[in-house]
Structures are given as C-alpha cells and as structure tokens.
Length: 233
Image (cartoon, rainbow, N blue to C red; front, top):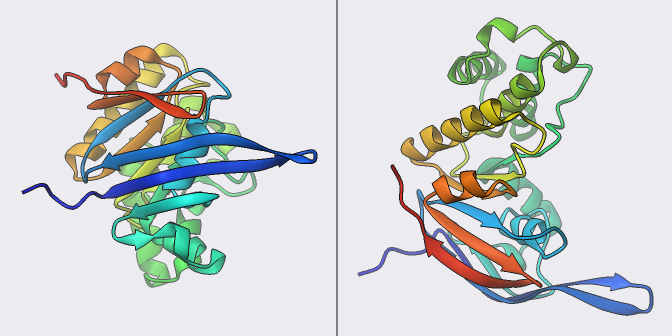
C-alpha cells in the first residue's frame, strides 16, 4: 500500500495578467512527492520552475487545481492562514540569502521563531545557536551578514530555514551565487537534512547537483517534461 503523498498537486494551472490578457505559466501540473524525498527541479529560465516551487511552498496559490501539502489544502485556505501555515511548516532558502543586514546571524535565525511565538525567548536563542553549530557557524553568531562570506551567508540562511523545525525545505537556486566547492558543501548539508527526515525540493540550474539528488523533475514550457529517479551514492 502506497504511503499518503506529502505533496500532491492535481491539475494545477497558474496564470498571471499580462496587459489585457492572461499568461499561463503552468499548465495542468500533476505531481506527487513523498515525505523524506530530495527532489531537484530543473529547466531553462522562464519555464515555470520557481512558480511551481512557490505553489508547493504556499508562497503563491494556483489559478486552478489543488495543492495539498502535509494534509493541508493550500488552495482552499485564507492568505492569513497560509502565512501562518508556511511559517510553521516550510523552510525557504533563496538564491540571494535575504538575511536582514542590520541583524547578526543568530538574530536572523531567531526571527522566524519570533513570528510564530511558540518557544520561550530563552529557548529561541538556544535553538538559534544550535542551528548555527549545525551549519558550522557558531563562531560567527555575532557577525553581521556583510561580515561573512557568501557561502557562510547561505549556510546561515539554511539555519534560518530550519528555525521552526519545518517538515519541508524548499530552495530556489541556493547555489547560484556560490563557487563550486561551496555549492557542493551546501548540497551535502541538504543531503544531511534529508537523512534527518526532512523533505527537500530544490530548483537549480546545476545539472550535476540535480543528478545527485534522489529525483530530478524537468519543467519545460510550464509542463513537467520528465520525472526520473536518480542514483544516490
């Protein structure tokens, strides 16, 4: 008996207004991802990869169709409920880090915990420091983002994504601004997170990293062109 899908998209379309007309960015997407999978989404720019990622992470909602993630119907809840759901269930890693420049690294990591207001304040700082240790940045906790390298900023951004212990981690070109060695280190951190039970979905232009993921989905012209299992070492 197949397990219940962690992510399930059914006949999903996404349209945006363009002048007096509508542009369809995603066409009839049907996709299932199970818990603890590591999935890479690839394809040329402008084909809908990031839009797909935004839908399954609750950043955006579909024009038509259903998006279910961890038994929640994202297509059917209010924007306010969606925001709180996303804060509790999804960790998001961006290409350009998006750390607040006036806060040091541990303060950036505490922010998502402050938003949900679940842990006592003392425990928030303790968890932030634990996460910085996980990404080998404990010694840089008091530094501003501008005082550390791009690779360190991306690792801090991954720690921030883990702040509320989300089941789902999504990453949009997380290695796009990193050199090859640092990109490989970030990818190894993602693999570690999968081993810890997280579900990961990553948009990338780096084909070698995509092939090293557990599964590779190619998006072309707003449709899923291929969906293949890859070999994990």
